[in-house]
Length: 185
Image 1: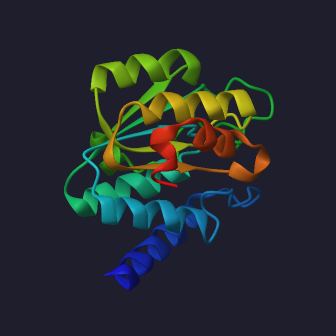
Image 2: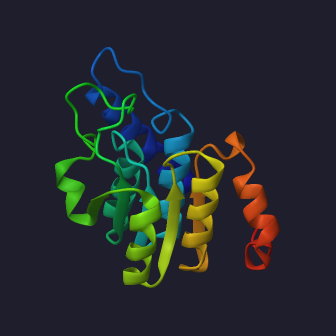
Image 3: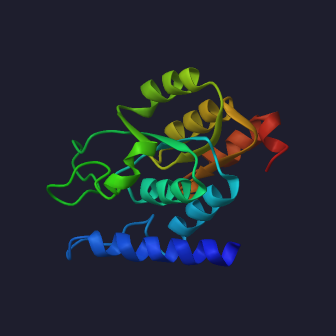
C-alpha cells in the first residue's frame, strides 16, 4: 500500500513541476520529501475534514486534494493571505492556490485572512477536524497559536502536521506545555 501511495505522490510531483514557469523553483512542498509525507498521511488517515494554514502556490493543497480524491472522501479548508505581501512565494501574475487543479476544487475552500482571526472562527464552525497542517508564517507566536488552537479541535487519533518545526521551539514548547499533546508525541 505505501509503495503505491509513494508512486502516486511521485506522479503528482511530476505534474506540479510541469506547471511551474521555467524561472521558478520547485518550492518546499514540491520537494521530493515534504509533499510525499503530506500526501501519504492523507491517503492513510482518510480525513473527512482537514484544515491548513499557508497556501502560497498551493502545492501542499494539491497533494492533499489529490489524496482526498483518491480516498473518495474529504474536504480541505485553507487559510492564507492573498498575494499582497512583498516577497510572497508566488510567481508573478499567479494567484494564491494557482497550482490546485480545477477538477479538485470541489473539495476545497480557500479563506483569505490572517490565521489568528480566521482559524478560531473556522474551527468553532467545524467543531472537530481530522487533520491540521501548519505552513503559514513561521514565527514562534503564530506557530504556537496555531498548534494550540487546532489541537483543541483535533479529534482523538487525528493528525497535526507542521512545516519547518526546526525554525523555532514552538512545537517543543507546545508539547511540553500541553498534557494532552504529550501523550501523543
